[in-house]
Image 1 (cartoon, helix red, strand yellow):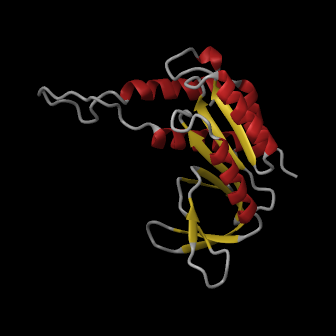
Image 2 (cartoon, helix red, strand yellow):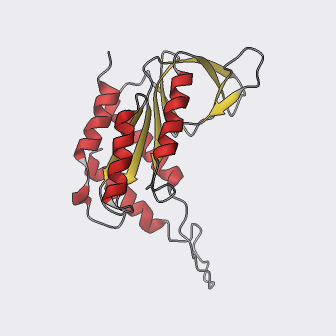
Length: 208
C-alpha cells in the first residue's frame, strides 16, 4: 500500500461515513453527523504499518488496554496506545493516531504529559488481557520506547500553532510528532507529507 493509496482509502471512507450503514429501506431516513472515523483510521494505519514491516512474527494491537503496576502493592494503572507493536513479548512502538488537532490545537501540555508517561513506562513489566479467552500476556516495555503521535490531517490549525507543537515535541526526549497530510481532509492528496512517512518508516524499520 502506497502513501497515495492510504489516503485514497481514507477519502473513500469519509464519503461512505455520511451514508446510512443499513440504507434507508425506502423510508425518509437521513443522517446528520457522519459516522466516527477514528476506529477505521486506527485499523488502516495498523495494516499500513504491518505491510511496511512485513514481519509475520510481530504482534500488532489496535486500541488495546495495557495494564501496569509501578509499585508492588499499588492499584494497577492502564494506558491504551492506538497501535502498539510487540516483538518477542517486548512493546517496541507506541503510536497515537489523531484525525486532526482540532481537539487540542495547542498540544504542548498534552505532549509534555505523554513524555513523562513514557519516561515512567520504559523498561517496566506490563500485561494485556485477551478479550475472548481472558488469558493474560505478560510483556516488557522497551527502554527506547517513544510516544509517537501521528496526525492524519494537519490543515485545521494555523501554521504558527502547528510549528509550536513541533518545537515542543523536538525538545522532548520521548516524543515524536508527525503530520501525514498538510491540509484538511477534503483537499488534494498532493499535500501528502512524505517526510512524515519517512520518519515513521525510520522508526519502524531501523532498529539498533
